[in-house]
Figure 1 (cartoon, helix red, strand yellow):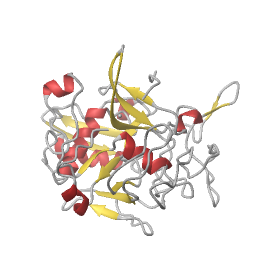
Figure 2: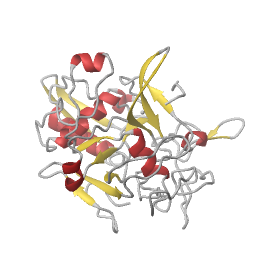
Figure 3: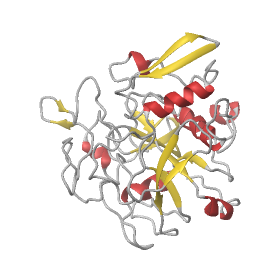
Figure 4: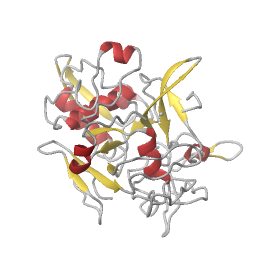
Amino acid sequence: MKTILTVVVGTFLLLTVAGSAITVDTVPVGDPGNTADTTGHGAVPYSYNIGTYEVTAGQYCEFLNAVAKTDTHALYNANMWSSTYGCKIERTGSPDDYRYSVASDYANRPVNYVSFWDACRFTNWLHNGGLVGSDTETGAYTMTADGIANNTVARNAHWRWAVTSEDEWYKAAYYKTGSTDAGYFQYPTASDNPPSNDLTDTDPGNNATYAIWTGSQYDYTINTPYWRTQVGAHQNSASPCGAFDQGGNVYEWHEAIIVNQDGSYRGIRGGSFYHTGIELRASSRGYGLPTYDSLDFGFRVVQLPEPAALTLLALGTVPLLKRKHP
């Protein structure tokens, strides 16, 4: 398994946050102006790059060390270390001098126990250079107390890195590519057939990290202590654009604001190691409170190439899960 912090993969577009502590691998998503799926999702009028992998525990640990010395914004969740399902990021030191480390065998597995607001602040950090002390409160998102309390924080027009919109996520996961009316797959493994949850990934592959109910118990792709596979472990089961693990491993936050009689939520997609394969389908949408940091919630980032950024300065990219997470 190649490490996410240094890998350059085939023809994938590798983007480094200039001068930053981490490297973020991305793949390009083209066919701007494509048609939406029958679900109404997936149309994106511009080209963009999406994270090849889910944000890893190693990358999030670098983020914490860069901006959470005092952890004013509660970016660290103690369950990351203490929970059976945690991504094994440990915090040490005193409240005014926190330090963070991650177990080496978890560094390339997706981070979990992160809220939507944590994800926004991570992308603000990337947007602002990804350096020690880089601002987490402005950039792609303006993190005001009122905006957080009312769940109205939206992506700013000048964004460079962000949490994916639902349409950006959906297109990268399911769109067949090749033209603006190429159509969509049913699963984010470039297939209309349900993937296996087997870790062994033959060529061509159709595998993902999720649970199967056998009638008496759940059959997980991998069990304790890891639960989640290393990112890209299903190396022959990429999405049509070349992103990995958009099905399974962890649910991924996206920007959609979903309001119903119970409250105001943010969207998640993609299924997780802890739930069944029905969550991987294009028709499956879910949501959670933006403050909710669960054992199977993570995220993926999106990046706007410079030429596209110049044409989008005046374009808002506010996107839009049903099925309340337990």
